[in-house]
Image 1: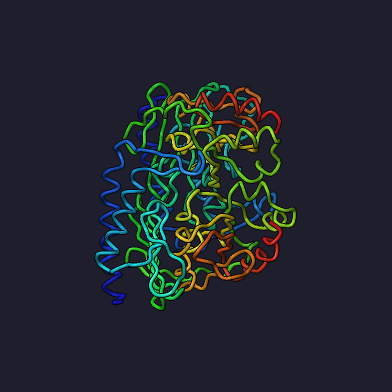
Image 2: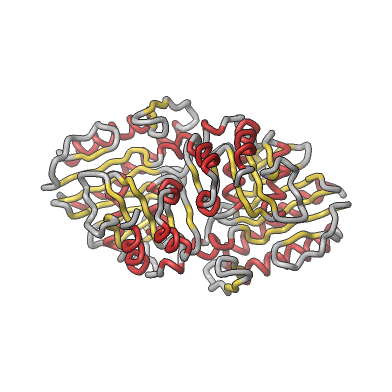
Length: 258
Length: 258
């Protein structure tokens, strides 16, 4: 795999997809329910995923694609090259706000993250991380965020987690500078990547939600693990902590109680 | 008071303040603690408020100014013209993210809102509402958001409210499409104003946080009251619901339990 060629073609394709998506936004969305009334999919989610799957298969002979809407392939192990696609991450934001959502793509080889893309479509900001080459936004290199302790920054979480949290967790959460909740892995992981918050907790993270962020974590000295401390499992749902090293340790200790 | 002249001068002044603030952002902030470790103020909060107070006094002979950082005046009743200023709304976001904060200004006459300004500094989007003239963003008129029910939209709240909420409140909250928390009245009231969410709840709203949004509410068929249903009190702290009419009613019924 020629990573330079892959990166150049895929970046360009994502930017074009984003442009087309912004153009298409004024038209009415077709919305369907999946597992429950809060689990929605639109015609755009499907179109973008079909487009990306076809693109990866045509240009990079992609054989293994873990994707949200079912147009990828069945992936049973992580050997060789594995792609992940979340065509519209934050579908509820996409529907209600037409903002604060993203397109997420990543490439792994034998379980090691090579390429990660987090594309904030409405601001046209394409963030990417390349294994051993650093992380960038629209061409500008990102610096590793300051390694702040939990007491020195914001925590990103959601109300489902807060409602069922243990007293031990709430005590630690109260030591932060505050809690924010943005409704998409795109906005929430970017907060950590940009150093705007020190920790992100989520109890039902799918591989396509977080696989790109793991590549950023490696390049920017951030830590992303399951709440148990184990490495993220790309083949299933995970409870995760994505944080600065200093914020990760105390959260991992209490997050076990969740 | 010539409202047209006031609006033209003040808009122009705010845009210039925002430009200067963006230029000044790379320099180090001087941060002080107010009532507790989460109640912070920076040199920029103070400078912007001093600037605005001086501007309003010089150009509009402002006598009554309710403001956050103490450079305004003591206001004991709402007779005549009353200004409100929040120089940096969302100071914690300002400090940690250098984003997602705003400058808020409003003008009332005998308790009636005449002018409301919500200035998203980093995106340079100046939202304004003028009594009987509608609401605008950078010159573009805003349409009244669809009057959606609580079950058809997002709820904006914060973790402090969720943690101490009654079961009755949590039940209603679960009927929404989700909860978001952005950490500034600027972002949170704009979500309602733009129709991206249907309701915003806050248990410790100060007059300068919400006074501009009340002017928008009147122009855009939105409802903003205390949780008791009473009109907002510009002379003290309030527990508020800012929502579409359809979302407001069920929230007011349960919010009383908080």
